[in-house]
Image 1 (cartoon, rainbow, N blue to C red):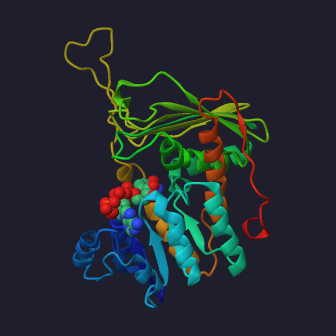
Image 2 (cartoon, rainbow, N blue to C red):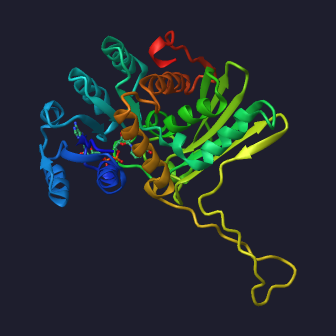
Image 3 (cartoon, rainbow, N blue to C red):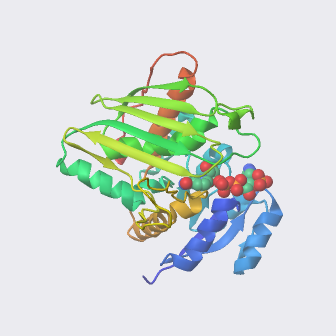
Length: 345
Ligand code: NAP
């Protein structure tokens, strides 16, 4: 690949730093030329580490800079809509970490702007689509070998949350991954959704619901049940099982080692085995993030984005809005999207 895509990063926190390292160290055909952050020192520190330009807190100045050909948005959720729109003002390529926005209305602005440009310019950070476990599940489901999918049982458990986290963010920030991956696995769209409050964990007395249960029904009648824990106190634990007519497919655990031995003192009862659980999303999906970023850059060089689109970001937010509206009502709320534009078909 001769040409090197010049990327600018908005947001130098956990994933901003990680993607910066990834692009510079492992992604062919791309490099990071500039960084910016709400806190100038965060941008200055990252820029100094790689010898690149810091725009301090002038994020919009960085987006406008002629050297920057593509923008990676890794700032906090409420800022995504404005930075995506700013990037699209200059018709530059954009990778926006999930969620695309915090509600469906804001995603519609992004879709409308892309339609004006007449080309897909935005990819959303739904990296699970690049995880080998999920990809193999999808391959088996799509092959039809185990019949039609009927149900999904999933869970998303996180260790803890930072200050300012709210109950609704359990959907818009956390379960948003499931809202994307379930419709992708099934090749189906949501009909309606309900968020159920259940017995609260002792880890929960921080002003937000934990756990919450997300229920979704699809147009083809599949039923999805996702347990969402945002403070489980033990690990980053992602599980997913799809029940089909003639069998099931299940997401493998990252540490799939099964130990077999005969410990001293063993009699007839096997000792309890303990599987190590990761605590960090960076490690759990490291390969998926790498592939996601490599494919994004490849698709830009080919002139056509192929990864998760603004439409995918929008549908997840429509489902998220329905879930947040349904909380406490004991009712399923319709998941109603606008008509899908030709650009995303
Ligand atoms: P983080 O560590 O808090 O980093 C966010 C950074 O954005 C911080 O440096 C923050 O500065 C900065 N920021 C705040 N307001 C800003 C503004 N107006 N303009 C520019 N920068 C601003 O959070 P993170 O974990 O990296 O997450 C960042 C984004 O990535 C989130 O949207 C999150 O949902 C997404 N994410 C996705 C995945 C995934 O699996 N795909 C995983 C992790 C995160 P302060 O420190 O001063 O607030």
